[in-house]
Image (cartoon, rainbow, N blue to C red; front, side, top):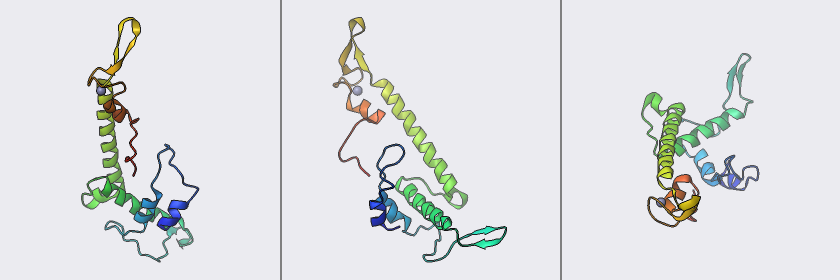
Length: 154
Ligand SMILES: [Zn+2]
């Protein structure tokens, strides 16, 4: 898939989580060689089945492209590639998951620290108890993922 095709594809406007997916970047990475995947352009890939080698399955090439894209995305995310089995996709996915969980735990702790001040009789104040900025403070919004910045696009 070319970068232009991926960008215009109306079937793929957003991910399931509602985040915009940069299909242009994915289209570029899908055709960019990666040292861990030796995908020969123009070759026909297939599956070994009980009936022999089946090259009529176009899904194999797509999976290989996605694997290449994934390796590039892990590189961009700073996930160590290691060597031997550590460079395989399952190992790198595990490291990526560990990083995501670690950062979510940190963000959850920050959210708990930056809370809205309370007032008498169940009233609430207008400021953050931790930093004293107007509620909700930027730190709280960043930690909980509600902070919006125009420059925050991938
Ligand atoms: Zn705060």
